[in-house]
Amino acid sequence: MSKSIFYHAGCPVCISAEHDIIDLIGASNVEVIHLGEDKSKIAQAEQAGVKSVPSLVTSNGNVLHINFGASLADVKG
Amino acid sequence: MSKSIFYHAGCPVCISAEHDIIDLIGASNVEVIHLGEDKSKIAQAEQAGVKSVPSLVTSNGNVLHINFGASLADVKG
Image (cartoon, rainbow over all chains, first blue to last red; front, top):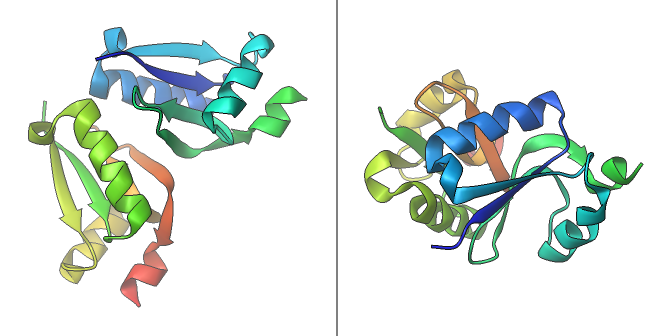
């Protein structure tokens, strides 16, 4: 199975969801990308269909928006 | 690890998320509850903090609202 990608932006909602996702699916199965620290990845997230963070993009390309921390527009600043 | 509980109401968004969650964490690690078919479980979901479906309640009690299918109020009808 290829990895899922968890996009977040360091917000409290994001960190809490990150812990839950890693507990559920295992750290080795998920790549974590902090869009606040790596803004060059924002375009990649948008292209995947991410509208807000935290979000998990599964290995088959589905986007799971988990709770709501911030919109991608807010992350762009 | 005790099971997570996935609450849904049969909506397309719910079914899609259910498949993704089962792919990610395995069918044996998640109990699926269809609130549309088993309305007696709505109170239990509310008490766990579920505001909308689909939602995953982790074994440590955190609620992950995944995408948005319907509010719990709508499920109550």
